[in-house]
Image 1 (cartoon, rainbow, N blue to C red):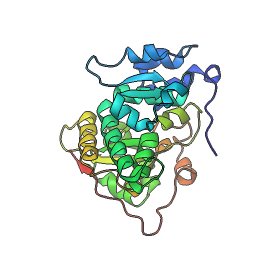
Image 2 (image 1 turned 90 degrees about the vertical axis):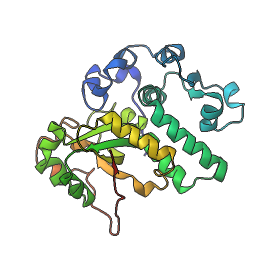
Image 3 (image 1 turned 135 degrees about the vertical axis):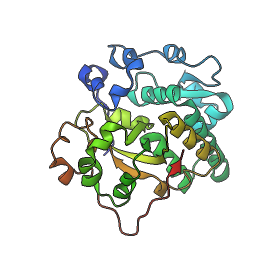
Length: 269
Protein backbone atom coordinates (compact mmCIF):
# COMPACT_ATOMS: atom_id res chain seq x y z
CA UNK A 1 0.00 0.00 0.00
CA UNK A 2 1.34 3.42 -0.97
CA UNK A 3 2.41 5.50 2.01
CA UNK A 4 0.62 8.82 2.47
CA UNK A 5 2.49 11.25 4.69
CA UNK A 6 0.54 13.07 7.39
CA UNK A 7 -0.43 16.70 6.94
CA UNK A 8 2.14 19.13 8.28
CA UNK A 9 -0.06 20.27 11.17
CA UNK A 10 -0.74 16.64 12.12
CA UNK A 11 2.92 15.87 12.84
CA UNK A 12 3.67 16.20 16.56
CA UNK A 13 6.98 17.98 17.34
CA UNK A 14 8.10 14.97 19.38
CA UNK A 15 8.54 13.01 16.14
CA UNK A 16 11.61 15.11 15.38
CA UNK A 17 13.23 14.00 18.66
CA UNK A 18 13.15 10.36 17.52
CA UNK A 19 15.52 8.51 15.18
CA UNK A 20 16.10 8.95 12.34
CA UNK A 21 14.64 12.47 12.20
CA UNK A 22 16.52 13.50 15.34
CA UNK A 23 19.68 13.37 13.22
CA UNK A 24 18.69 16.52 11.28
CA UNK A 25 18.71 19.30 13.92
CA UNK A 26 20.25 21.88 11.58
CA UNK A 27 17.00 21.81 9.59
CA UNK A 28 14.66 21.93 12.59
CA UNK A 29 13.24 25.27 11.44
CA UNK A 30 12.13 23.74 8.13
CA UNK A 31 10.81 20.55 9.71
CA UNK A 32 9.04 21.87 12.79
CA UNK A 33 7.72 25.25 11.72
CA UNK A 34 4.02 25.67 11.06
CA UNK A 35 4.92 26.86 7.56
CA UNK A 36 6.65 25.06 4.71
CA UNK A 37 10.04 26.46 3.67
CA UNK A 38 10.01 28.19 0.31
CA UNK A 39 12.15 27.08 -2.61
CA UNK A 40 14.24 30.23 -2.12
CA UNK A 41 14.85 29.26 1.49
CA UNK A 42 16.00 25.81 0.46
CA UNK A 43 18.45 27.34 -1.98
CA UNK A 44 20.07 29.49 0.71
CA UNK A 45 21.69 26.36 2.20
CA UNK A 46 23.65 25.37 -0.90
CA UNK A 47 27.41 25.98 -0.70
CA UNK A 48 28.50 28.87 -2.87
CA UNK A 49 30.13 26.61 -5.49
CA UNK A 50 27.19 24.21 -5.90
CA UNK A 51 26.13 23.58 -9.49
CA UNK A 52 22.55 22.61 -8.59
CA UNK A 53 19.56 24.48 -7.25
CA UNK A 54 16.00 23.63 -6.34
CA UNK A 55 13.20 24.85 -8.57
CA UNK A 56 9.46 24.58 -8.19
CA UNK A 57 8.04 21.70 -10.21
CA UNK A 58 5.56 23.25 -12.62
CA UNK A 59 4.04 22.21 -15.91
CA UNK A 60 6.23 24.83 -17.59
CA UNK A 61 9.36 23.24 -16.12
CA UNK A 62 8.32 19.76 -17.17
CA UNK A 63 7.65 20.98 -20.71
CA UNK A 64 11.40 20.90 -21.38
CA UNK A 65 10.93 17.18 -22.12
CA UNK A 66 13.82 16.08 -19.93
CA UNK A 67 13.70 13.17 -17.52
CA UNK A 68 13.93 14.29 -13.86
CA UNK A 69 17.52 13.01 -13.60
CA UNK A 70 18.55 14.48 -16.96
CA UNK A 71 17.31 17.90 -15.85
CA UNK A 72 19.63 17.74 -12.85
CA UNK A 73 22.62 16.59 -14.92
CA UNK A 74 22.14 18.98 -17.85
CA UNK A 75 20.61 22.04 -16.22
CA UNK A 76 21.40 21.65 -12.53
CA UNK A 77 17.71 21.92 -11.67
CA UNK A 78 16.21 19.72 -8.95
CA UNK A 79 12.45 19.78 -9.56
CA UNK A 80 10.78 20.17 -6.15
CA UNK A 81 7.11 20.19 -5.27
CA UNK A 82 5.92 22.88 -2.90
CA UNK A 83 4.56 21.83 0.50
CA UNK A 84 5.57 18.20 0.04
CA UNK A 85 7.34 16.10 2.68
CA UNK A 86 8.89 13.69 0.17
CA UNK A 87 10.54 16.46 -1.82
CA UNK A 88 11.57 18.40 1.29
CA UNK A 89 13.44 15.36 2.58
CA UNK A 90 15.01 14.89 -0.86
CA UNK A 91 16.29 18.45 -0.58
CA UNK A 92 17.81 17.73 2.83
CA UNK A 93 19.63 14.70 1.41
CA UNK A 94 20.99 16.80 -1.46
CA UNK A 95 22.26 19.40 1.00
CA UNK A 96 23.92 16.89 3.35
CA UNK A 97 25.22 14.35 0.82
CA UNK A 98 25.68 16.25 -2.47
CA UNK A 99 28.59 14.12 -3.71
CA UNK A 100 26.65 10.90 -3.16
CA UNK A 101 23.60 12.37 -4.88
CA UNK A 102 25.71 13.53 -7.83
CA UNK A 103 27.38 10.14 -8.26
CA UNK A 104 23.98 8.48 -8.22
CA UNK A 105 22.57 11.01 -10.67
CA UNK A 106 25.41 10.45 -13.14
CA UNK A 107 24.89 6.70 -13.06
CA UNK A 108 21.13 7.13 -13.48
CA UNK A 109 21.58 9.43 -16.48
CA UNK A 110 24.09 7.06 -18.09
CA UNK A 111 21.62 4.20 -17.76
CA UNK A 112 18.77 6.33 -19.10
CA UNK A 113 20.91 6.95 -22.17
CA UNK A 114 21.57 3.21 -22.50
CA UNK A 115 18.08 1.89 -21.86
CA UNK A 116 15.84 4.88 -22.56
CA UNK A 117 13.64 6.92 -20.22
CA UNK A 118 10.78 4.40 -20.15
CA UNK A 119 12.66 1.13 -19.67
CA UNK A 120 13.82 0.06 -16.22
CA UNK A 121 16.96 -2.05 -16.07
CA UNK A 122 18.26 -3.87 -13.01
CA UNK A 123 20.82 -1.11 -12.40
CA UNK A 124 18.04 1.48 -12.51
CA UNK A 125 16.01 -0.47 -9.97
CA UNK A 126 19.06 -0.64 -7.70
CA UNK A 127 19.64 3.09 -8.04
CA UNK A 128 16.01 3.91 -7.29
CA UNK A 129 15.91 1.61 -4.27
CA UNK A 130 18.99 3.27 -2.82
CA UNK A 131 17.77 6.78 -3.62
CA UNK A 132 14.46 6.18 -1.85
CA UNK A 133 15.40 3.81 0.99
CA UNK A 134 19.18 3.85 1.05
CA UNK A 135 21.37 3.49 4.12
CA UNK A 136 25.14 3.40 4.48
CA UNK A 137 26.23 1.12 7.33
CA UNK A 138 29.73 1.51 8.75
CA UNK A 139 30.87 -1.66 10.53
CA UNK A 140 33.83 -1.47 12.92
CA UNK A 141 33.17 -4.84 14.58
CA UNK A 142 33.69 -7.55 11.89
CA UNK A 143 31.76 -10.18 13.87
CA UNK A 144 28.52 -8.35 13.12
CA UNK A 145 28.71 -9.06 9.39
CA UNK A 146 28.28 -12.83 9.87
CA UNK A 147 25.11 -12.24 11.88
CA UNK A 148 23.77 -9.96 9.16
CA UNK A 149 24.75 -12.41 6.39
CA UNK A 150 22.48 -15.07 7.93
CA UNK A 151 19.67 -12.69 9.00
CA UNK A 152 20.33 -13.53 12.64
CA UNK A 153 18.39 -10.46 13.70
CA UNK A 154 18.20 -11.48 17.35
CA UNK A 155 21.98 -11.76 17.37
CA UNK A 156 22.57 -8.55 15.44
CA UNK A 157 20.16 -6.33 17.35
CA UNK A 158 19.76 -7.96 20.77
CA UNK A 159 22.80 -10.06 21.66
CA UNK A 160 25.03 -7.44 20.02
CA UNK A 161 22.99 -4.50 21.25
CA UNK A 162 26.07 -2.87 22.79
CA UNK A 163 27.69 -2.58 19.33
CA UNK A 164 24.95 -0.16 18.28
CA UNK A 165 25.69 1.96 21.34
CA UNK A 166 29.50 1.94 21.37
CA UNK A 167 30.18 2.59 17.68
CA UNK A 168 30.76 -1.00 16.58
CA UNK A 169 28.25 -0.27 13.84
CA UNK A 170 26.85 3.06 12.66
CA UNK A 171 24.24 3.94 10.06
CA UNK A 172 23.63 7.01 7.94
CA UNK A 173 20.24 7.32 6.27
CA UNK A 174 20.38 8.43 2.65
CA UNK A 175 16.92 7.50 1.38
CA UNK A 176 14.49 10.38 1.58
CA UNK A 177 11.46 8.07 1.57
CA UNK A 178 12.75 6.52 4.81
CA UNK A 179 12.75 9.96 6.43
CA UNK A 180 9.24 10.57 5.16
CA UNK A 181 7.98 7.25 6.58
CA UNK A 182 9.52 8.16 9.93
CA UNK A 183 6.88 10.88 10.27
CA UNK A 184 4.58 8.07 11.41
CA UNK A 185 5.80 7.01 14.89
CA UNK A 186 6.05 3.26 15.39
CA UNK A 187 6.29 2.47 11.69
CA UNK A 188 8.69 -0.41 11.06
CA UNK A 189 11.48 0.91 8.87
CA UNK A 190 13.73 -1.23 6.67
CA UNK A 191 16.63 0.29 4.75
CA UNK A 192 18.35 -0.83 1.55
CA UNK A 193 21.95 -0.84 2.63
CA UNK A 194 25.49 -0.48 1.35
CA UNK A 195 28.04 -1.79 3.85
CA UNK A 196 31.48 -0.35 4.50
CA UNK A 197 33.96 -2.15 6.74
CA UNK A 198 35.97 0.46 8.59
CA UNK A 199 39.48 -0.08 9.86
CA UNK A 200 41.22 2.13 12.37
CA UNK A 201 39.87 5.64 12.71
CA UNK A 202 37.96 5.86 9.43
CA UNK A 203 34.94 8.14 9.86
CA UNK A 204 31.43 7.98 8.52
CA UNK A 205 32.47 10.67 6.02
CA UNK A 206 35.25 8.36 4.80
CA UNK A 207 32.70 5.57 4.35
CA UNK A 208 30.39 7.85 2.37
CA UNK A 209 33.34 8.87 0.18
CA UNK A 210 34.07 5.18 -0.52
CA UNK A 211 30.47 4.73 -1.69
CA UNK A 212 30.70 7.83 -3.87
CA UNK A 213 33.83 6.48 -5.56
CA UNK A 214 32.39 3.00 -6.12
CA UNK A 215 29.14 4.36 -7.55
CA UNK A 216 30.95 6.86 -9.77
CA UNK A 217 33.06 4.02 -11.22
CA UNK A 218 29.99 1.81 -11.68
CA UNK A 219 31.16 -0.81 -9.22
CA UNK A 220 28.01 -0.44 -7.11
CA UNK A 221 24.27 -0.29 -7.69
CA UNK A 222 24.30 -2.47 -10.76
CA UNK A 223 21.72 -4.87 -9.32
CA UNK A 224 19.14 -4.47 -6.52
CA UNK A 225 20.41 -7.71 -4.93
CA UNK A 226 23.56 -5.83 -3.94
CA UNK A 227 21.53 -4.00 -1.33
CA UNK A 228 21.18 -5.64 2.08
CA UNK A 229 17.91 -5.19 3.96
CA UNK A 230 18.48 -3.60 7.36
CA UNK A 231 15.51 -3.47 9.79
CA UNK A 232 16.27 -0.04 11.21
CA UNK A 233 13.56 -0.43 13.82
CA UNK A 234 15.82 -2.90 15.63
CA UNK A 235 18.45 -0.25 16.40
CA UNK A 236 18.34 0.99 20.02
CA UNK A 237 16.21 4.12 20.18
CA UNK A 238 14.64 3.63 16.75
CA UNK A 239 11.45 1.93 17.94
CA UNK A 240 9.70 2.22 21.28
CA UNK A 241 9.37 -1.56 21.70
CA UNK A 242 12.88 -2.70 20.87
CA UNK A 243 14.14 -2.49 24.46
CA UNK A 244 12.21 -5.73 25.02
CA UNK A 245 13.82 -8.96 23.78
CA UNK A 246 10.44 -10.19 22.57
CA UNK A 247 10.48 -7.51 19.85
CA UNK A 248 13.62 -9.07 18.38
CA UNK A 249 12.03 -12.49 18.27
CA UNK A 250 8.82 -11.59 16.46
CA UNK A 251 8.93 -8.14 14.80
CA UNK A 252 7.41 -8.19 11.31
CA UNK A 253 10.38 -6.28 9.88
CA UNK A 254 12.65 -9.25 10.61
CA UNK A 255 12.47 -11.50 7.59
CA UNK A 256 14.38 -14.80 7.19
CA UNK A 257 17.11 -15.16 4.61
CA UNK A 258 15.71 -16.40 1.31
CA UNK A 259 17.10 -19.69 0.07
CA UNK A 260 20.09 -19.12 -2.17
CA UNK A 261 20.43 -15.43 -1.26
CA UNK A 262 23.98 -14.23 -0.66
CA UNK A 263 25.34 -10.72 -0.28
CA UNK A 264 28.36 -9.17 -2.00
CA UNK A 265 31.48 -8.36 -0.03
CA UNK A 266 31.39 -4.98 1.68
CA UNK A 267 33.48 -2.00 0.71
CA UNK A 268 36.54 -1.29 2.85
CA UNK A 269 37.92 2.01 4.07
